[in-house]
Length: 555
Image (tube, rainbow, N blue to C red; front, side, top):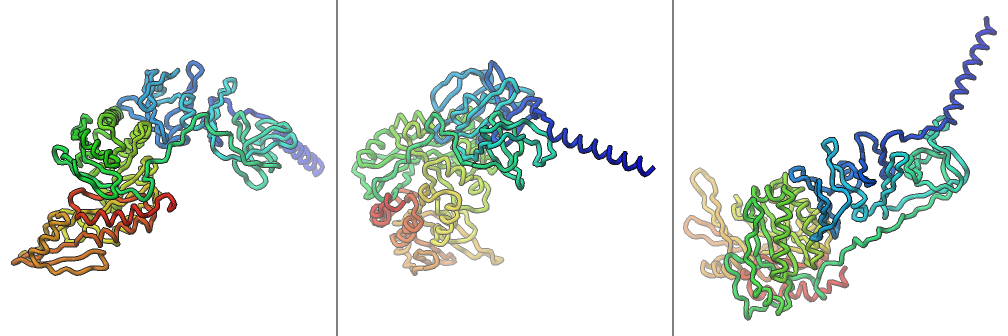
């Protein structure tokens, strides 16, 4: 009996050993179904791609997750938008006419809807994405690689199996021949995850001679020229508020000014129409004086109009086309975007609009800038800005470092105290590089009127004053004026009957202090709100802090 048991055990062990041996030497091709391989990620479920007329179309959600997080699908109009640093590409279902910036391009296969999901013609977009698409029709496999990505490549020094799992007992996917090259994506102990040229991922024992290589740059140049900047010094810009008709600027000259931004354009309705106050004579005056003109477009500070337009691809296109027409009509040098009071849920739509606009403006040689507030917890006035991604899209981001205490503030205070301004700069620099940041400065202040009501409640009102008006109020009311180090400003106060008046002044000294932060943080320059609110001496202050500082050697 004992002999029989021992014999049975030996036979059982031999069978197990045989199974293990056979398993370790069995080869199974891993991709029996439609397979998309992107670097070391494998997609097989729910038709990752389809083919039509030999062209590959990849499912939209895979492209968004693996290739381009900014690709935008508008289901309402059945249109996809792709933005790169220098291109805005639009494709529509059932249309062989694509748009690349402002030019039509004919494609072989349009966007398709398959199983209620959009599929995008990836081979047409390969050059824009900087990818290589390789098809293996006999295996129903498509492999996508990023051209400019550094990767580790190993050469097989001795014939060996490609294992399904990091174990000698695993079955094989194929046998790698001597001299065959594989991409290395990581390791688990002595086992390395590799991928063959035909897209099969598996494990091999640690290879020799792992090298880092780049497949090669795309056949096209997706670099963009550096944005305009002054030949010497930092950018000195001023906004010019145009309430009605553009004024006659004849005879006006501003020392050290580089850029003037008239508030000419406004998005005025949910149809995407732009109100236009442009004037070619204004531009001629500016150019004759050596000033660039970056016309401002605002959203009328209307969140509902803004939401409707930003969330519709065709309305965004309409706005962009109008901007292009006006830029050409008035011979502009740039566009300044001033969209404020935007719903938080439209944050990504605002970024998408800017990403679509930027390449098209650059193609026309125009500078694109956007205005953002100092960070706060306000949804419509601060959190609505994706500063990091906006900063990547634009040439310059202007930090509106004013309205620390706004018109309707429940407490009196400075428009732009030095500490608040500096904290705003530091916070923005966490997301946007200094060479893109322009510091917004106030040429105005607020006069605060306080009154104690019955029950002890303090009534607070304010009105905006130009620098000259503020000084006039102080003189007329014989106000007490002292320098407040903690604010970096002169502070004035006086009383009239039951009212107390307070003013945190903006003057030569306060502007000098704030504009010195541009050199301290090596920012791109200054933008001041607004022309006509300043004292003439302010331009000398800005000239000294901006023009005399050599921009080019400071980078």
